[in-house]
Image (cartoon, rainbow, N blue to C red):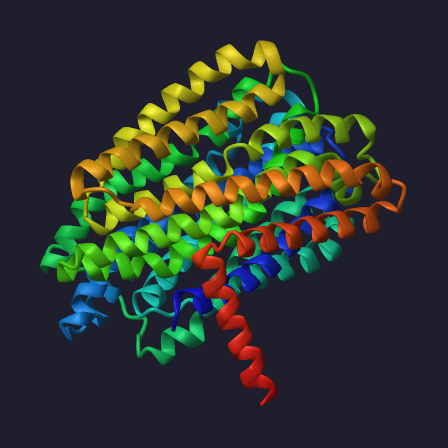
Amino acid sequence: MSLVKTASYIVLLTLIGRLLGFFRSVYVSNLYGTGMAADAFSVAANIPMTLFLVVPGAINAVLIPTMRGMLEKGEETAALYHKLLALILIVFFGLSVAGVCFSYEIALLFGLNGEMAKLTADMLQWMWPSALFIGLAGLWSSVCNAHQHFFTPTLGAVANGALVIAAMYFLVPAFGAEGLAMATTLGYLAAWLTMWPTMRRFGYRHRLSFVWHEGEAMRSMGERVVPILIGATIAQATTFLERGFASGLGEGKLASLYYANQIVQMPMAVFVGAFTLPLFPLLASYVKRGEMHLMKQTLQKGLAYLLILLIPVTVGLVLYGEPLIRLVFERGAFGREAVADTTWALVFYSLGIYALAARDLITRAFYALENTRTPVVIGVIGIVVYVISNWLLIPVFGHGGIALSAAVSASSQALLLFVLLWRRIGSPVQSSFFFTAGKVAAACTAMALAILLSDPFLSLLPLWLYLALGIGGAAGLYVLALWALREPLVHEVMRKLLSRSRAGSA
């Protein structure tokens, strides 16, 4: 299956899943605004959310290169799966139990106290069992991806979002804010179980093997998993550090950062996942076969597609952030002050979207090379940059400085990783990539000018129609500009779409 076709259905499923997650955020904001319950939920929910971002990615990074090598040699992979299944069950069951037992102490670590700490701890006790489901989902999704199957792991995000919304509808009236936590755990259970039929189709039986010391594959993965886990944890550390930086800025600022980040994470999850998921097994396969020229071509194509997709998203969020937040969140307890605070954070978060995407994709290139230490070192540097940036920027931009610091940190990491990868394998991109960057800049400039010129007229319309026409028109103009500038990747996608439409009408 082609990269564009695979990416297309991953985009569609991820978009549906993220929209469902977005509706969940709208539901929470409508009930609790940016008050204490919303702050407590944003803190508590970030633990399973961080596990969901860290654990599957770490398992994916160590398992896919190993399993792809075994599959290409025609070797049996069931024994490896049985060992990993036993290991993950033990580790994540223990983590869940420990989390439930020490939820209050964990809440205190976030600098919380009093009623806020108690409410957060109560939510955490309901959320910690999700750690087991996240670990198992990470294993199953990695096995599916190693077999170059991406549909059901991505479908898990849809199942997660749908069940969370349904469960919240029934549980919140009965259990109050704690119902949000119960629903969150049920969502991760649904994401895991969605992959059950696919695992059976690939012939995997869920047996446990505790012979972990035997086999080169387990030893090799064991050497790589610790730095990968450290690196993935460091990549998410800003999520936890921002709570400390925001704690002295007043009530509601933490929730504003949370809601702004929810908006930014939608294009990140939709487009970044669409390319990193199918590209990583390809990168690993090319490295295993010694086809480094194909590895670099694939990496460049991924970086170029992300550039084409995410730079206009950044421009759109900067120019349409305030009306978008009004349309999505402004109701119930979410008033004008919450809109202003969330918009301020969104503008600065959006500046780091492409850097985050490039960082994650280049990190996967290092993992394909079985180099796990370099991303860890760069991640540590990124945290130092983040902390220093906060000290400098918060006095100037308030809670917006926290969001801007995240963008600065991501940009520094992406640049350093790119330079170090260049030193390792030669230039990861050719001159055509920089021509694409120039065309994207020109097309985005035209799009931004069109938005600014049309805004006085479109803003007279109802908010939903204003955004629909403004965003739709801007996106159309952007694509036409790239087409007129003869961007090869856009022409490639358009040719495939036209050929399919002709085939369908024939």
